[in-house]
Image (cartoon, rainbow, N blue to C red; front, side, top):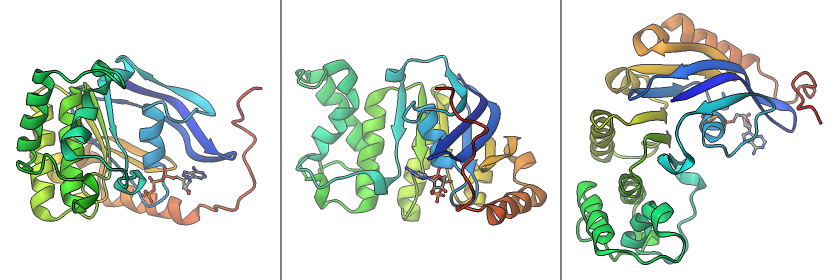
Length: 245
Ligand SMILES: Nc1ncnc2c1ncn2[C@@H]1O[C@H](COP(=O)(O)OP(=O)(O)OP(=O)(O)O)[C@@H](O)[C@H]1O
């Protein structure tokens, strides 16, 4: 469903991803891991089409409407006055449109999604009044509404307690049984080993991609750390991969 083809993505001509190649397994749970600044979020944003490659391409055989993307919680502004139920209903935005009416069926689905993530009774709470764990559950309920084939999650368990993490991991496994493809940026190796069959290990370049037990080896992890430490953020700009004007 998603093929990465010699992908280079740069910010101000400094590559955050450099000549990445690989294919995500359809219907699998794949973790994307690597040291800080290794290009994990950049990969997800590139798959979502939010960033323009400076070289290569991302190929997906699904439509944009069937891809769901959950950014890092720090990138989401929840200061606007929105109730939990309305926030969850935004998940079916592609079928209602910006000003479309919400049908009784959609409302029932939203209520069911809120129940599934353990937030029954919170339907009319303002999202700004929720704890970060409760808000993450709301965002997962919104993902449930989207009925996506491909789900991209950027550090979904960051700062979540173990109960919330376990509940959200259950949902991710449920998505897998429904045949959905999940790609998640994660930091916890033990969690990846326990729950994700496939792993992509990045350090701006690709260190390893394949079955988790073959990727998360000490030599691979050491190589990723060494590459990250050797990286110079103030290096000269890279002209080699400039997009032809
Ligand atoms: N909008 C931007 N403008 C300039 N540089 C950026 C931008 N976004 C990311 N970068 C840089 O690109 C590199 C890769 O960033 P990215 O966020 O993809 O890494 P990451 O692996 O997700 O990091 P982390 O684990 O810390 O979240 C970093 O050096 C980062 O500073």
